[in-house]
Length: 611
Image 1 (cartoon, helix red, strand yellow):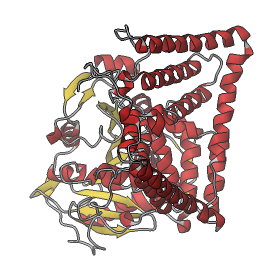
Image 2 (cartoon, one colour):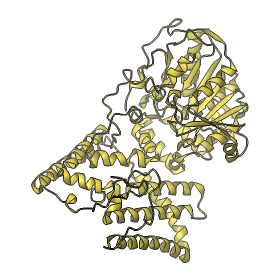
Image 3 (cartoon, one colour):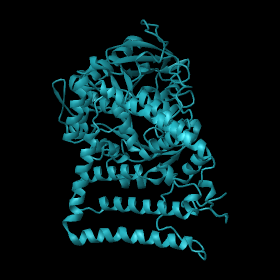
Image 4 (cartoon, helix red, strand yellow):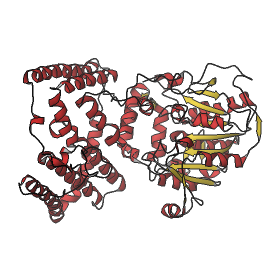
């Protein structure tokens, strides 16, 4: 059965029948409804019991209050002028009238088919079932929803006088509410869910409520949304399998050295500083996707920092501690393991922000061991930061700090939820529908296994990051205080390879571009296709996406893009050529443990600690 890609209308003439929405076995359906209520009771108990024991404290009110305040400011603008309010209401009413007229025309015996008042955006997968266009009831719901959500977005877009932070938050919250109330999320307003429920006599809802109870129990009172079948995966067995040894361990980091794959290697070892917000094995998911394995095959002696999954013992560990006991400890370990002082370094996301701050501090202290730095989707200036900035203002940061100080850390589920909300239409609601409405187990997927393997945030570390980067933008302003120094990125004069991703929602390409100007040396800005993960983890063998290169990142961003050269495929070989142009000296391959005692096999023990 064919359908148009943007409206979901069926092109055949088969009429929609009422029978497919009628219960065939009322007795069995009623029995399953009773079983569903029983499972729902178990879900409620899994939610309530940890709260009754005082093990869980709800902080739901805090973001809700912020959302209400934001919408209040938006409402003030539109209601302050009666004429403006009337025009806004008229636009919405006109949209509804068009939807209603189309609905009347659609049910008319002589109707030949009316165009939708509004069509879903290209790539919107929620309304692909033919019944969204063929059935007058579901078509009306779809169009009314789309008209309302577009109207709400336009209210934010056209509200004058709002400061940019409030506008950003209003736009984000409107998107969250719109995604949540979509008719595709509910049994009675989604034709596919309705049919499945009737066809199975409600057994899908029994399975769904059982999964909901299990996921709340797994989250110890909070919903831990199941995005994949995690059971096939095990760290060290079929994920993060590149051979190597743990050659160092501090309170906050394990240092992993990987086995060589070539007879000779680049003289300069490579140190990778991943984010502590996620685990490092995003760069070593499997042999086909592993940047670490690929870098080894190009002749790098690769060392990786594997951050601790912190608990109450690490609450006072600050950014300085992560620099001293993570980055600089890694450099010390490399020197012991290889005898080399000169090192190439990579920082990914917040790991890159830490690396940039560390380089500025090391410049003040005369530590020149890092000879080149590569940043993967890293922000050093947060003026145009991504949607995470929605969660950062003085009131929200103070609330997070209060929550962290109770335990010494921020629960990993809180960060995981925040990241999922950035793409709730892809990472939340499809799984809510699939798991709890359809009662279907999600499929195995290594990337989503990694996404669900969340980490906690040490209180002092996370507070420093939120305040100095997102809230006060001290790093790019040259006012960040570290180890008694006021550090400046202008003191960082080593060569920089600054990689952005075109569709990145966490570190937008514009933000990365603008951050380039704060470094004191030459910066090679490269923009990859796709987003925060796929844009980085893009092995050449996949022959996917593209990347852009151009002149120095000193002009207007749009001008740079207009003049940039488009290259098909992965940026990895381009980076390798950049690295080799700095120093291509080769030495015999280095084996972990040759000059120092090892502490176990890669990927180590810290990465296996789960929330």
